[in-house]
Image: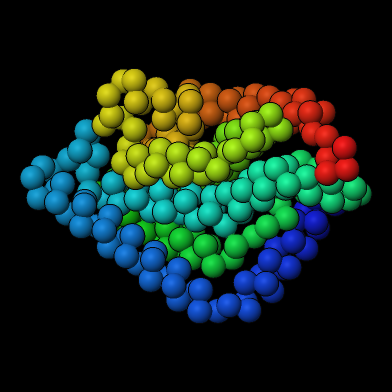
Length: 261
């Protein structure tokens, strides 16, 4: 409960800071509409030549695009801002201010920055997903919805763990800024189901960078493609990766000497 109250406090502070620059909302909205328009044009071009893409019909791919947009909004709203702030603090030695706070350092480093205007992508992603669901020609039940929400949480957790493990390398590596651009490029591959890619790339998007769990797996849950084995595997993987992330974070934290060292 303490961590939840702390997260809510940082959200309020971040919201107040962002609300000072309300024009950013319209800029972000324009950017989101442009990205969605580009995605819809891409889908139109694909399905003007074929009726399905690796077994995915237009409504199902619309859901994939919605989940891709939604998860991208989650990443841009809270995960990426906190990770880039952590990299900067470690490099400048100002991470001391986090360590002196009466809260868990990893939790504090993960929730202290919120860029609320980026959540426009979350809202637009939800709208696209709902449109895709309404266009599905298969029966949709509460079970799919619950599994979808579970896989969304698991996917976001895996993305967070991936980011945190990479960011923890800042305790050893001087410059980590290239990772931000690298991840953005890799994540863009998630706008389509990972099954359409060759085996080596599909493996990389599933095991190395968990884009498949963040986008494709939740989409499969809504479209009835997901089996119980994959659900259990995703949950187990998230628990394992959370443990690994915590251990690696503690190990890296011991390497931090601080600004006064």
